[in-house]
Length: 229
Ligand SMILES: *Cc1c(COP(=O)(O)O)cnc(C)c1O
Image (cartoon, rainbow, N blue to C red; front, side, top):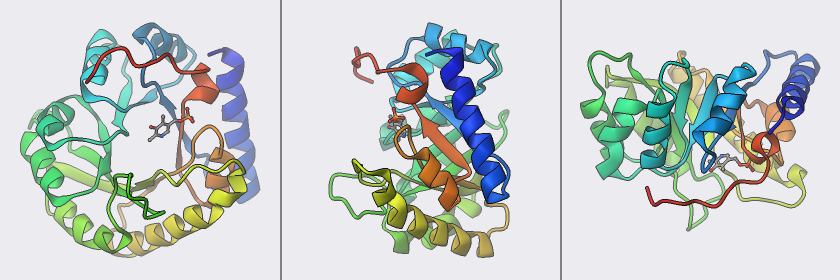
C-alpha cells in the first residue's frame, strides 16, 4: 500500500467520472486479512470506507480502530448465526441474499444506531459455488427489506465470474445495471451499485457502478488468512 496507489485509483475514478458525466464512484478499500495498522495507514491518507469479508476478523479490527470515524462494509458471505454481530458492528452489509438474513439483521440492529444500509447480492453469472440471489428474487427481497425500518435498502452488489480479460465482465455489469434501473423505478432511495474489483473497476464504472471494491491494487498482495472467523 502506498500513497501513490490510493491517489492513482482516485485519479482514475475522477477521469472515469469526467468521461461518463456521472459523479465519481466511491472507493471501498477491501481490507480482508490486512492488519489494523495497514487500515490505519490508509485512513491517515484520507480513505474512509473499508470492506471486510469475515465477521469476527472485522469486529476485532473495527474495535481496534474505533475513533477513526471509519465506515465498515461487510462484503463476504454472512451466515445467519453471525447476523447479530454484523448488525451491531457494520454500517453496511452488501451480501444480503435471502429472507432469513433480512429478518435477522433487522431484529439485531441496535435501536441506538442508524438503520443498517443493505445491498442485495445477486448471483449474476448463475454460478453454483457463489452466494447471492437469483435475479428474479431481487424484487421480492427488496420488498422485505423496504418493510424493515431498521434496514435501509441502498441497491445491488455482484461478484461476476473472474476473467483474464476484464472486458469479458461487461455483459454481467450491463445486466446488473439493468437490474439496478428496475429496482430504482420502484425504490427511488436506491443509489448504490457495487461492482468492480482491482482488475476490472474501470469497466464496472463505465457501465454504471457507483461503488468499487478494491483490495490488492491498494494494499498489494493479501497476507494469508490467519484465523477462522
Ligand atoms: C477480496 C474482494 C474484493 C477485492 O478484490 P481485489 O481483487 O483484491 O481488488 C472485492 N470484492 C469482494 C467481494 C472480495 O471478496
